[in-house]
Amino acid sequence: MKWLKWINGIALRCSKLARAAHCCSPIVVCSVVCVLILTLSTAHAADINEAREIEIGDELAVTLLEGGKLLNNDRAQEYVNQVGRWLTTGTERVDLPWQFGIMDRAEIGSYPLPGGKVLVTLGMLKKLTSEAELAGVLAHEIAHVLKRHQLKTMSAEGGQEKLGAINFPMDRALEFEADRIAAVIMTRAGYDANAYLNVLRSLQNDRSNDQGLAMLNAVHPSFKDRIAELAPVVAKIAKPTQPDKSRERFQAALGSLSGAGRR
Ligand SMILES: [Zn+2]
Image 1 (cartoon, helix red, strand yellow):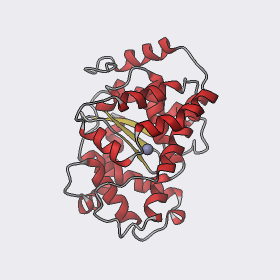
Image 2 (spheres, rainbow, N blue to C red):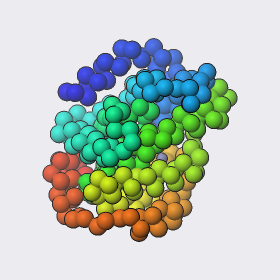
Image 3 (cartoon, rainbow, N blue to C red):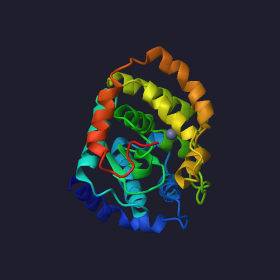
Image 4 (cartoon, helix red, strand yellow):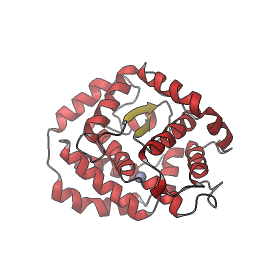
């Protein structure tokens, strides 16, 4: 399996750092934050070249996957990877080694890693009903990677001082920017950006005690504000497409996953 090869390859190089930086919190994102903070404690984002950016992403992937393995479903992994890579073809950083995968975790979550890796949880997939909605989630994370939002945020705020922080929210403006860019990326790739608004509304209306959703709420602006910021952009640029085909492809690839496609 290509994904396991990828993980095994980078695990060897990175396990020492990952072990050293692993936080005690059970929340995966905390570990990611801690490693990134360690990495950035001596560097400014502008000084990090693309090769190093990719290395940092590899290191973070290892740590992230210590808290939840990749889903053992080749077809689903390939499908998510294909949708993600298709989205990146119209971007200014098409040459990054983009890889997209599904983590076998029940809570809602998605994680952009510097250098072009993006992971979504099975819990997130279960909130989605179509390929266009999946594209929206992936495009938001692609936007963070394109603009190096994580590197910029952490180095701007002083990595060393942030060591041990549990939550690491990005600037609200960066989240709104990622939403806007996501709508553009989706539209360019032929998806209806309204589908992304549907995802945000679905998450806004989720009343479960999902731990991942609680974390998402903690590190992002409210869904209400995000929808209010994004809706006028989508109204301007969205090109309605065929929702049935988007649903059919999604169901064909992911319908075997229990609960996939249900709200
Ligand atoms: Zn975000």
